[in-house]
Length: 197
Length: 197
DNA sequence: GTTAGCATGTAAGGAGTTACATGATTTT
DNA sequence: AAAATCATGTAACTCCTTACATGCTAAC
Image 1 (cartoon, protein in one colour):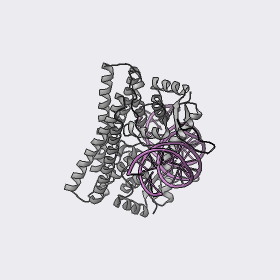
Image 2 (cartoon, chains in turn red, blue, yellow, purple):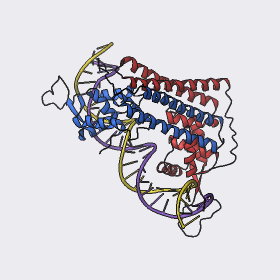
Image 3 (cartoon, protein in one colour):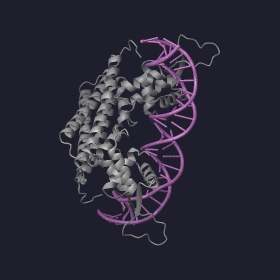
Image 4 (cartoon, chains in turn brown, blue, green, red):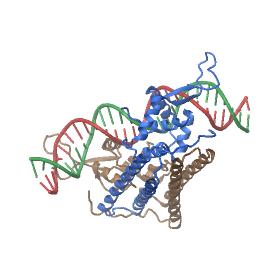
């Protein structure tokens, strides 16, 4: 079973809502996910190409404007999910195995929680929490072992890094508690109203 | 003037304190910098090789244990800065031009603040702050423009991301204020005492 | 009519990872 | 004597970026 990389998954999720142009996909990636990285076209279009080849998405040549006679003009291309694309997304949404616990993968996976069932959400949140706790522990060990060869700035950097991770764990704890007390199902009906690009 | 990548800079800074083996360099990178990435040997050794070629560092074959007759045994190699290595580090420490404002580059550069003069520290902190403020602004625009096509989870992800950046700005503000009120010089004398690997 | 933003793509290259290959030293 | 950890390195591959190349469309 071919595996889905982070970027492809993000795109699958986006196109499940509505067809989009490459350009629009890029913009939404930049704004919708945390302060997600604005990825470059040199990265995006090859990915779309791979997804086309894999038959996860299909390309529709521009709407009203028919391809005007003979001239080799590229026009805007709207991408939409194919049947296997929908299937692949559903598979991914049901699983938490594919380490969705790295920083970036977690963000993408989290942004799809609206389409994910409660049990899976919980598994992913807990997996992420465990991952961060491990990180915390390792750093703690490091601190203990090297009892301060550090100057003030290095120490401050570490303290700050540690604090950031601790806060993220607290955030997860809140989400986990919330999920346990009110485990509503997929419940997703964000009527995708007025468009704006 | 050849430019110094982030990893090379981190290594230069580390070796300025004392000679180290590749293995030790890796461990310190993993623990000393924030929760810095534990980078792989497949990345580290090629970098050391490049630095050798560029004459920034020199390799000393293991200490006491002389290379025992004929046998092709690799033993531990201690790396130390050469004259040009020291020079390069000094150059880097004096400049803030080379965008030390990205997440990772900033961390590395910050960890060298003990060897950096007050004016340069201030320039770097302010540059970083500006960078983050820009990010904040962009995200804000994005939020305003797309007035919520978002489900609750996506919104929460954005809120959390925003909060994280805001906190980082506050952290920088504190450091900047501190730096302005007490701009002591390089003042670095962390007597590198008892070793421990 | 010119600028700004929309739109799609390719080629070269940078920076890192995983997996492999090898062997020495220290601890249990 | 086995296991853990120290220690060095290479090859193949992944994922992303920058710079280039092209052209349309709306606003000023």
